[in-house]
Image (cartoon, rainbow over all chains, first blue to last red):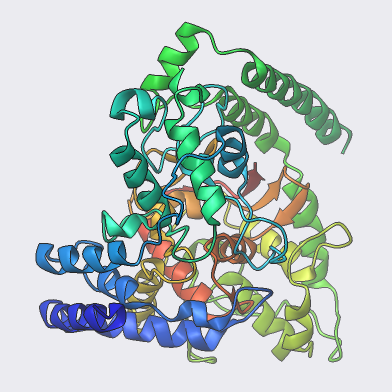
Length: 202
Length: 292
């Protein structure tokens, strides 16, 4: 199903449900930001345009009605591109570097060089790194707790590729969907969480 | 001066020791006990040694803060005749009448009839530099943040004005309709998710007890914690050793939000500061401070 069309439908349905004054404030906010902001480096003005999903989350205080959320999550899931070779597990050591690296997608990032996943900004992951954030849940011992099987591998790949496929208004960015991380980088992160030899599972 | 330097040196030594301990802790092989502890960590994780040590450092420093040097510079700038019109800023009206500084900072952003706009302190000072002294707004906006080579004049001026509200209660007004509108639009900006990573201000600042890495994140939607958007600002930031105002803080948050850049002293920033300022009403403002 066409992503945009489905999202717009959802947004239209929601618009009815919320108060006119909140809509009014949001409209003013969006117009004001478009007037006051300017493009800088790789951060263009198009970033102020909500996509369909952002529009639905913004209009529902991140709590869209279940039915709409379910439909849009399915749309997001359908857009996940899984590895052509069917293998989800990369190299956990490279995954640790991706998890540590907080660069990418800001106006001060050149756009050259690999982006990072900023994972430690929000999650506890490996046992050695004590400088971790708490916006996301702890991923320490992830494989040990959740299992190492192909279903879990596919789930983790999909979750990193597009977190919104599983929780529409999740705080977590869509790292594959937005082109922030490459297929190889995501595989390496899957290995960090799910390789039995990764320190995460020791 | 000497005593400030001495205190900096003593406090820095303490911080360096804490940092070394923190680094050691990171490098050490994880013991079973440590692993069990970090397993339990998460939302309720205790503050890291480095955060706790920084807070001690801040307490020592706030008695004789480097911010005071910038207050003194700001006072000179305020009282000296400058600019194409060779005027001082002593006739600048920060909301309580021309030249009245005491308590002005804790009552901003506010509506100014002469500009028919809600303005935060830096926006208003820049407005005065343009209207009274004849400086050009685009010149002031060119490099508005402190770096290795300079501390822009508005930064020192804001620090001076903020110091004149030390120990006073925050009372950001909501009487004028445009002040109430600024609050509502500010809240909408705060919650507006967009950009490459779907972030809004609220992504990081709408829950209690969260951190990015080891940096505590205040919940700016709550009355108790919104004071964090006021307290310690303008602040002497230990990272880099620069004096920064909230204009810089908002700018760098939008950078990390993966948004394009907000205009310097724009209405967007005044609205956001109105939202956070009103949320912080009733708290006591301690004056310019120190930031990690």
